[in-house]
Amino acid sequence: MASSCPGKNSWPELLGTEGKAAVEIIERENPNVKASIVLEGSFVTADIRCDRVRVWVNTNGIIISVPNVR
Image 1 (spheres, rainbow, N blue to C red):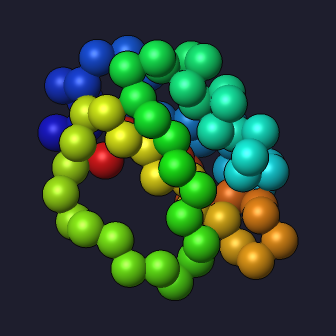
Image 2 (tube, one colour; image 1 turned 30 degrees about the vertical axis):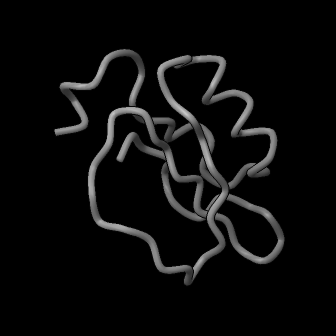
């Protein structure tokens, strides 16, 4: 479903990088989305939205999974 969303929808190049910096990059590369940092282990809704990217980070603030539109 994410592939039908406008603009870039996946950022594999950000895996392993610092979450706060990645949020800025994601929002600059796709102004249709709002990126949010989510701590590993947090509970989130399962709905898919074209205007949201969850940036999953560990306790050190490092991205642990590829950020995608979801």
